[in-house]
Image: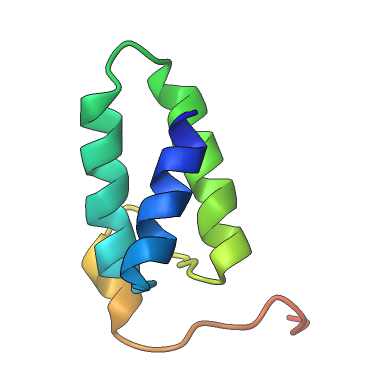
Length: 76
């Protein structure tokens, strides 16, 4: 399946940076134009959260590599 292919590639390469994940995700989305893009993006977001590679600035992938963000357990 789509998400299994993406996960397998991440695990094979052992790379988890936000920049790498964004590039990989976009490549897999382009390779799977026959699938629903919104659903693919949702699945990829869930995978990214599971890997602990999330960013508050999802619209700017490179900004995610500039430093740590707040942890999910912190209160505002």
